Image (tube, rainbow, N blue to C red; front, side, top):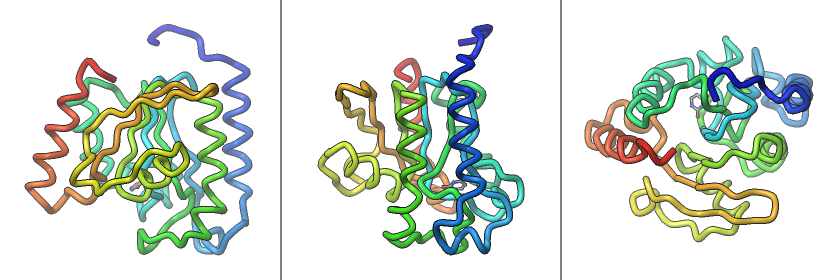
Length: 197
Ligand code: URA
Protein backbone atom coordinates (compact mmCIF):
# COMPACT_ATOMS: atom_id res chain seq x y z
CA UNK A 1 0.00 0.00 0.00
CA UNK A 2 2.81 2.36 0.93
CA UNK A 3 4.01 4.45 -2.00
CA UNK A 4 1.05 3.42 -4.16
CA UNK A 5 -0.90 6.24 -5.76
CA UNK A 6 -4.53 6.32 -4.61
CA UNK A 7 -7.11 5.53 -7.25
CA UNK A 8 -8.19 9.01 -8.33
CA UNK A 9 -11.67 8.07 -9.46
CA UNK A 10 -12.33 6.34 -6.13
CA UNK A 11 -11.05 9.37 -4.21
CA UNK A 12 -13.53 11.60 -6.04
CA UNK A 13 -16.41 9.19 -5.48
CA UNK A 14 -15.62 8.96 -1.77
CA UNK A 15 -15.49 12.77 -1.57
CA UNK A 16 -18.92 12.88 -3.17
CA UNK A 17 -20.36 10.54 -0.54
CA UNK A 18 -18.71 12.62 2.19
CA UNK A 19 -20.17 15.83 0.75
CA UNK A 20 -23.61 14.24 0.70
CA UNK A 21 -23.23 13.33 4.38
CA UNK A 22 -22.13 16.87 5.24
CA UNK A 23 -25.29 18.25 3.63
CA UNK A 24 -27.59 15.60 5.08
CA UNK A 25 -30.69 16.74 6.94
CA UNK A 26 -32.59 13.46 6.84
CA UNK A 27 -32.99 13.16 10.61
CA UNK A 28 -33.07 15.34 13.70
CA UNK A 29 -29.41 14.60 14.55
CA UNK A 30 -28.49 17.06 11.80
CA UNK A 31 -29.99 19.83 13.96
CA UNK A 32 -27.84 19.11 17.01
CA UNK A 33 -24.56 18.08 15.39
CA UNK A 34 -21.66 20.49 15.06
CA UNK A 35 -19.64 18.65 12.41
CA UNK A 36 -20.85 15.52 10.64
CA UNK A 37 -18.34 12.67 10.75
CA UNK A 38 -18.42 10.90 7.38
CA UNK A 39 -15.34 8.74 7.93
CA UNK A 40 -11.62 8.96 7.61
CA UNK A 41 -8.80 7.09 5.97
CA UNK A 42 -7.51 5.45 2.88
CA UNK A 43 -9.87 4.95 -0.05
CA UNK A 44 -7.86 1.89 -1.08
CA UNK A 45 -7.90 0.46 2.44
CA UNK A 46 -8.07 -3.31 2.74
CA UNK A 47 -9.42 -2.94 6.26
CA UNK A 48 -12.56 -1.02 7.24
CA UNK A 49 -13.56 -0.35 10.84
CA UNK A 50 -17.18 0.44 11.60
CA UNK A 51 -18.13 2.00 14.92
CA UNK A 52 -21.45 3.25 16.25
CA UNK A 53 -21.43 7.02 15.85
CA UNK A 54 -19.53 10.18 16.74
CA UNK A 55 -19.19 11.18 20.36
CA UNK A 56 -18.42 14.56 21.91
CA UNK A 57 -14.88 14.99 20.53
CA UNK A 58 -15.67 13.54 17.11
CA UNK A 59 -18.54 16.04 16.80
CA UNK A 60 -16.13 18.91 17.41
CA UNK A 61 -13.38 17.64 15.08
CA UNK A 62 -15.41 15.97 12.31
CA UNK A 63 -13.26 12.82 12.51
CA UNK A 64 -14.05 9.37 13.90
CA UNK A 65 -12.46 7.94 17.03
CA UNK A 66 -10.47 10.95 18.19
CA UNK A 67 -11.58 10.84 21.83
CA UNK A 68 -10.75 8.41 24.64
CA UNK A 69 -12.00 5.33 22.81
CA UNK A 70 -9.99 6.47 19.78
CA UNK A 71 -6.85 6.47 21.87
CA UNK A 72 -7.57 2.92 22.96
CA UNK A 73 -8.37 2.01 19.36
CA UNK A 74 -4.91 3.23 18.33
CA UNK A 75 -3.41 0.82 20.83
CA UNK A 76 -5.57 -2.01 19.47
CA UNK A 77 -4.61 -1.21 15.88
CA UNK A 78 -0.98 -1.48 16.88
CA UNK A 79 -1.62 -4.86 18.52
CA UNK A 80 -3.30 -5.99 15.30
CA UNK A 81 -0.28 -4.86 13.30
CA UNK A 82 -2.07 -2.17 11.28
CA UNK A 83 -1.53 1.57 11.10
CA UNK A 84 -4.39 4.10 11.15
CA UNK A 85 -3.27 5.48 7.76
CA UNK A 86 -3.81 2.05 6.21
CA UNK A 87 -7.45 1.62 7.26
CA UNK A 88 -10.75 3.38 6.66
CA UNK A 89 -12.72 4.21 9.80
CA UNK A 90 -16.37 5.07 9.76
CA UNK A 91 -19.58 4.66 11.75
CA UNK A 92 -23.13 3.46 11.23
CA UNK A 93 -24.39 6.90 12.33
CA UNK A 94 -22.59 9.96 10.96
CA UNK A 95 -23.79 12.70 13.32
CA UNK A 96 -23.29 13.24 17.05
CA UNK A 97 -25.19 10.70 19.09
CA UNK A 98 -25.49 12.25 22.56
CA UNK A 99 -26.81 9.04 24.17
CA UNK A 100 -25.09 6.38 22.01
CA UNK A 101 -28.50 4.92 21.40
CA UNK A 102 -29.76 5.44 17.85
CA UNK A 103 -33.36 4.72 16.93
CA UNK A 104 -34.07 2.17 14.21
CA UNK A 105 -35.30 5.08 12.06
CA UNK A 106 -31.97 6.87 12.43
CA UNK A 107 -30.11 3.68 11.51
CA UNK A 108 -32.35 3.13 8.49
CA UNK A 109 -31.90 6.70 7.26
CA UNK A 110 -28.15 6.87 7.80
CA UNK A 111 -26.96 3.39 6.86
CA UNK A 112 -27.32 4.13 3.17
CA UNK A 113 -24.12 6.17 3.43
CA UNK A 114 -22.28 3.27 5.05
CA UNK A 115 -23.57 0.94 2.32
CA UNK A 116 -22.15 3.29 -0.32
CA UNK A 117 -18.79 3.49 1.48
CA UNK A 118 -18.54 -0.31 1.64
CA UNK A 119 -19.55 -0.65 -2.00
CA UNK A 120 -16.90 1.84 -3.11
CA UNK A 121 -13.98 0.89 -0.87
CA UNK A 122 -14.62 -2.87 -1.16
CA UNK A 123 -12.55 -3.74 1.92
CA UNK A 124 -11.13 -7.26 2.29
CA UNK A 125 -11.68 -7.10 6.04
CA UNK A 126 -14.55 -5.42 7.92
CA UNK A 127 -14.20 -5.05 11.67
CA UNK A 128 -17.50 -4.23 13.34
CA UNK A 129 -16.95 -2.44 16.64
CA UNK A 130 -19.75 -3.07 19.12
CA UNK A 131 -23.30 -4.36 18.97
CA UNK A 132 -24.93 -1.80 16.68
CA UNK A 133 -22.32 -2.04 13.90
CA UNK A 134 -22.22 -5.82 14.26
CA UNK A 135 -25.96 -6.30 14.08
CA UNK A 136 -26.22 -3.91 11.12
CA UNK A 137 -23.56 -5.74 9.11
CA UNK A 138 -24.73 -9.22 10.14
CA UNK A 139 -28.30 -8.42 9.07
CA UNK A 140 -27.15 -6.78 5.84
CA UNK A 141 -25.15 -9.84 4.80
CA UNK A 142 -27.47 -12.47 6.31
CA UNK A 143 -25.13 -13.80 8.98
CA UNK A 144 -26.64 -15.41 12.05
CA UNK A 145 -26.45 -12.83 14.82
CA UNK A 146 -25.35 -14.15 18.21
CA UNK A 147 -24.42 -12.37 21.45
CA UNK A 148 -21.11 -10.49 21.27
CA UNK A 149 -19.79 -12.65 24.12
CA UNK A 150 -19.98 -15.61 21.76
CA UNK A 151 -18.84 -14.13 18.45
CA UNK A 152 -16.20 -11.52 19.31
CA UNK A 153 -12.94 -12.05 17.46
CA UNK A 154 -14.37 -14.72 15.15
CA UNK A 155 -13.55 -14.45 11.46
CA UNK A 156 -16.49 -14.99 9.12
CA UNK A 157 -16.10 -15.16 5.38
CA UNK A 158 -18.45 -13.14 3.20
CA UNK A 159 -18.62 -14.13 -0.44
CA UNK A 160 -21.03 -12.21 -2.64
CA UNK A 161 -20.68 -11.21 -6.27
CA UNK A 162 -19.85 -7.65 -5.24
CA UNK A 163 -17.82 -8.22 -2.12
CA UNK A 164 -15.42 -10.85 -0.79
CA UNK A 165 -14.46 -9.93 2.76
CA UNK A 166 -13.66 -11.25 6.17
CA UNK A 167 -16.18 -9.96 8.70
CA UNK A 168 -14.84 -9.76 12.25
CA UNK A 169 -17.11 -8.66 15.12
CA UNK A 170 -15.32 -6.98 18.01
CA UNK A 171 -16.30 -5.42 21.31
CA UNK A 172 -16.49 -1.63 21.05
CA UNK A 173 -13.35 0.00 22.50
CA UNK A 174 -15.51 2.38 24.58
CA UNK A 175 -17.28 -0.54 26.28
CA UNK A 176 -13.93 -1.74 27.60
CA UNK A 177 -12.55 1.58 28.85
CA UNK A 178 -13.66 1.01 32.42
CA UNK A 179 -13.83 -2.79 32.38
CA UNK A 180 -10.45 -4.51 32.82
CA UNK A 181 -11.87 -7.92 31.81
CA UNK A 182 -13.23 -6.63 28.52
CA UNK A 183 -10.05 -4.66 27.93
CA UNK A 184 -8.01 -7.84 28.23
CA UNK A 185 -10.38 -9.71 25.93
CA UNK A 186 -10.21 -6.91 23.32
CA UNK A 187 -6.42 -6.85 23.45
CA UNK A 188 -6.30 -10.65 22.97
CA UNK A 189 -8.75 -10.48 20.04
CA UNK A 190 -6.77 -7.75 18.29
CA UNK A 191 -3.46 -9.49 18.90
CA UNK A 192 -4.84 -12.62 17.27
CA UNK A 193 -5.46 -10.58 14.10
CA UNK A 194 -1.78 -9.88 13.59
CA UNK A 195 -0.84 -11.25 10.20
CA UNK A 196 -4.50 -12.00 9.38
CA UNK A 197 -5.62 -8.48 8.55
N1 URA B 1 -17.39 5.80 19.13
C1 URA B 1 -17.80 5.40 17.90
O1 URA B 1 -18.51 4.44 17.77
N2 URA B 1 -17.40 6.10 16.88
C2 URA B 1 -16.60 7.14 16.97
O2 URA B 1 -16.27 7.71 15.95
C3 URA B 1 -16.17 7.51 18.25
C4 URA B 1 -16.58 6.85 19.33
